[in-house]
Length: 290
Length: 245
Image (cartoon, rainbow over all chains, first blue to last red; front, side, top):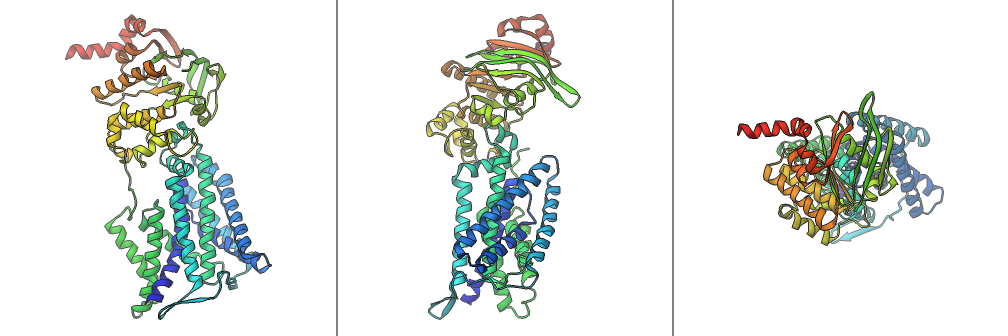
């Protein structure tokens, strides 16, 4: 039971960190980024290639995350920035769908579809708590996801750029007249999202096999986590991701015949949450005074 | 304290001319009022000054330095504060966060505690509501947030676009009163568009009447208030309403 809970939380932390990236983009541009999962997969592959080529893993991970940040910056600066303001938000979301297919085929053509085992960078140790055995890998994944959440929440709550980013998405005219340059803060948002998403890709590769489609299901669950959490709340996204991961893991193990249904059942939870609280747990809803 | 000099300013939206060779001065330490009917170009003038709207030609100088077509973030840094039309609060953010963003041009995330305290003294209602999302406040309270946010940026020249539009008379009087107070105590220069022409001219040192994108009349506040054309066009309907009562 406890092992299942821990595995559920570990999977959930992948959904959670991917959902964090989605929340960042949502707050930076007001859209969901369908390409987030593929950007994460690409980051995981980049670090994989560097590690297998002999680059020490911490350096390989840092370089891969830097590359992810640059990709995020390029997508914002050369694509999203140019159509933002002139296009509807839906059009930008569809643009990210195009990026999704593009990045997916780039990954597939470079690394092929054959699954690869990610190098065990966090070691292969097992920790025993009494009768409960947990791999070190899972524990490290959990810690990293948790720290990432704290950093993102701290970014919004305690930094000037974080507050400026929220200001710019809430009201761009007001932002400009207090001296915020919207394009600059949005760019920072996209870079951070790409890095946080990249972290989730590397975490997922550590728990599962590395393959081009590995982020598809996490991506769908991350959307769900984001919605449960309230779309714009980093804390809500993480909580949503953990709940979905736990639900999946426990349903798959303890409910007869539910293994194949565990994901749809997890989604049933989402539907229930949205029926009861349409704005999600921590959504501020729309505050507009008539 | 700042002076604003605008000369032969032209602004167009596509084929539509919003401002045509408009020239005016908002002097240091004075309150300057802009009067004119809807669509005369008053909002475009304020927008062009902060850089929210592109100017086609002309001159905009703050204390002698050219600021035409600069990014708003630069205009803020040289001392312009802008209270735009339509109560532009950060609706999802709290009142306090709104005020902190007013200090965005300074170092650090938050406004100085003393500046916040001063705004709460000026607008006590805001202190009661400091943790509330600004979007949930009443219209008058939102207007106070926007003015306080602009003041926290310590402008030397404050531009106001219809600060009292849609507000209860008591609150709009209170807002105008606080502007006079700041003008007297800090020497804050003010350039304001105000639909309540009587009230605006009564506190203004200087006034301009704008029609079809150009200045058609100017003078001291008292001169304009006494001018027969102004009375007929801009005060006429008001006094007619008053007589009906």
